[in-house]
Length: 476
Image (tube, rainbow, N blue to C red):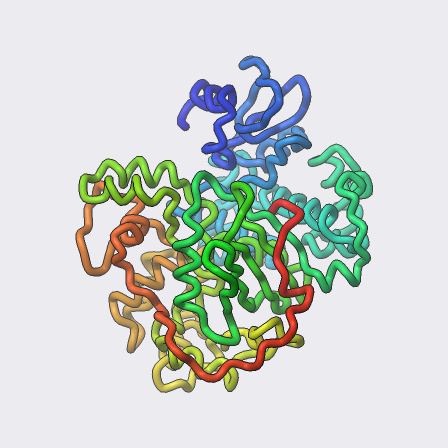
């Protein structure tokens, strides 16, 4: 959408396709909303448009209570774009500003803090601090309304530097105190119960979602003790362990959904990892994709038209652990399964068959097959974080002994979430850009990193505790 009149048409028709792509604010009420907000459409002269929620908040507008504009799918533009703004947005989403500040973000991007501030503000209407602040506010609302944790703990878990900053931000964004925000949801669980049960989420997506195909892929790739897919097709649950900046986590996501979201639950040893865990799940399930744009471009190609029409909502899944995926690609399924116990990190408490976090690169530097890649990942020669330059990463991968061109392309597609990687063995067409990764999914061309066969004997299945459950009560 390139002009405000077209955006206003989307608002007038309450078009959910553009939720997260832009936001509109009403000057007479001081409220900002998503395009699909069910409220009465305001007059055109009273409406202002913003590219991000942070920009709307920066102009003094508060989040709408009805449409929850802070809980929309992310913009697909950040996955497509490889420039500094796109890389910065992916890193802010992963919590880099909260952990390392703006200087840390700028250093990872290879720019000065002033350059990063100027470019983000010019294009998005908000700098990195404001963008991270908007994200922290969303995380805080989620914790307030889905857990019974004390407000003070929530403030620091969401990334705020002080309780005062937390209170001021919540009042500015939601026009309510944290206590009032919690009262609306009627959260009644105690703090200990909330930690044991995990954080329930609804992970929003845009348009149709071919969940069956995604869960088929995850089931085929699952590495024992690290991942599992349980249940019958159509009602499966995917679970896996995560290594996170401050601790570990166990996440579960349900295939069946009652709306345009996936129900999930995240159990963390350290709640400060919530934002990072959510964004890793979103990348894994490709929840910020724009299926309408993909179908429009690929459906116009004669070789793809029929299959695009027959399979709406096909996604190009990413990965929750980029370095893990790269190592598994090189190791293959059997060896990936074999090294989990001797080199992985045991969970404090098992969740079903999940017992370990996949080995970190530093633990595999001496491995005869994965060693060269593990050393390159451990020393930073190869970077696969959300802000990595994709071209640089692929070149660095190809220079590592044992990493083939096909493996490097697959890692770029999955670990770096590049939507425009062409099929490795099949037709390619410039007119499919920037969605060639999706074309490969439709054509069945991309190789699978792990075509999982029988691995080592699994531990006996333990009773499923509350941390392993799924189901969601909040929006994330």
